[in-house]
Length: 329
Image (cartoon, rainbow, N blue to C red):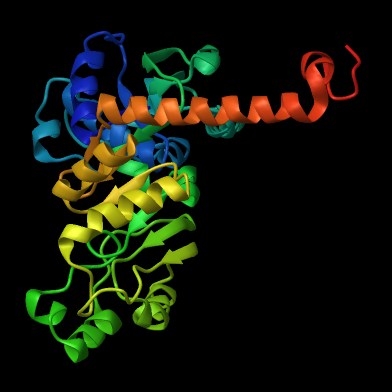
């Protein structure tokens, strides 16, 4: 897995800008994530900034006083686009290249007078030919902090409800049934996603399933599966000591792509127990699995594959195993 945080992105911009051509006069970001990279790069290079639509329309993003008194350009930003300029159009990540090709077609149709170059902070090696400049070549799976909850793999991932999608209950709410019911109905939402969540994970008792589903629907959170801990424990919610074990087991059982956990302590435990990556929303870190847990996971997978091969051998005979089930090459 390849993961980069916003801090990593900023460090990349500091390093990259010294390697880019020094005749670039304007940075244009591709919305939405490309604008984050463009903004950071424009700040470090002390250059004016716009987005792709603004570039086509001849519109700049408003600059602060610090830029206006800089050495690159003086006065209002408006006249900037009245003269042909060297413009860097930038994405944060190019994987399929479809978004960049769409932007290129849009800009070419506008027949702008500027000299245009295209860049991306991160790019798949198979798409580097689409770019004039890139900072780093990376291969999937890739996760970036700034858009991780909008990643397509959210639909195959596990997301902790309390602490990620909604706030945690207070100690008083957690110990009183009626107050806990009121909390479920009125809990403030926290992070949101544009994707359908594969598995929403809650440590609430099973008897709160209907109320929990109602809250998710109220706040427009789509999901495939809602997992509740069950009523086999006392109180309104499981003891915290049980939560990491419960989440780790679910993560393994559903073969999730990633787990989103709010508690850093639990995130570390889940990663250690499962041998899988866990994204901690509290610290904005990607918790890496321990090497021993990863080894156990690989051994288990290989053992399972070996067992299936043995079953195939017994079922179809040696000839079928070697040459195909119908015995032909």
